Amino acid sequence: MKNITVPYTNNASLKLRYLAVQKFSKDDSRALIARTLNVSRRLVNEWVSTYLSHGLDGLALKKATGRPPLLSTAEKLTLKEHVLCHAAKPQGDRLMGKDIQKYIKDTYGVSYHVRNVYHLMNELNIVWITSRSKHPKQDLAAQDHFKKNS
Image (cartoon, rainbow, N blue to C red; front, side, top):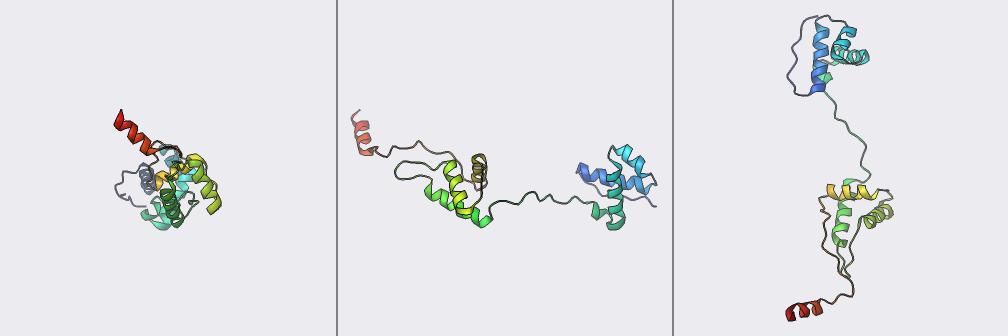
């Protein structure tokens, strides 16, 4: 096999793959490559097979998709509207994480831990810092009168 030149990358995982293929092109055995790079022989076999069938482009790292979200984008936007509309109530009560958790469960049938409700609020760019709550029987006029006469 001929020596190959590998493209530059600053990704360590991709560099390792390129180095394995480069060593393979210099007629090093797969077992020797595995020992030299301190990886399993199975990985070297996979990388070399991918290189032989798809070239250097086949060695590129695939994007990890992860677990799909429990709520769709549209549902998240609806939830955001609900939270913004009900965050502060005229009676002085506040919307709390457990209230949002219950709303999500009742509306969408999805269970979230309260901690993850706050992560979801962060994802929706809702800052969860609220003002001090007001008692429903609080008289604002009496407070203003007291402040002026003090």
